[in-house]
Length: 189
Image (tube, rainbow, N blue to C red):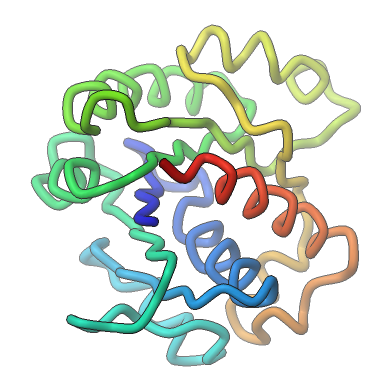
């Protein structure tokens, strides 16, 4: 299963969730690798620090491939990743700026993801007691894709994980990631 993780703007948490979802799949016993197609190389550096997951290599022995993409909707790397994928995961925070960019990202996903393949939103940096955090269903409707029922809260532990790996996460953080990974694996064609 190839999952392209995308958003047309930086700061949504795309790379963080690419690495942490790959780690969650690994923790659940799956053979997983990450392909870092973002020229910034943040996911590659993160994995070099933590060794929580493997970077993808040609002919690698993995069941799940997570593809981290550049935050540019006109990127050929994003378009290629979507065209090769079984599923697209749009990472978005519940904010107006992410809402607008996510709407634009949906158009790119629809243009490049092969017909019949699922695309979902994973809401990130959610603060459940805020106005926008309480109504993720309406935001998903405005963006134009169904959302995973799992969402990722705003926690310092996710930033710490870039240096300390999966072990930096508390139980609640791990559970959110494992629930998102479980929902994604159920989308497998």
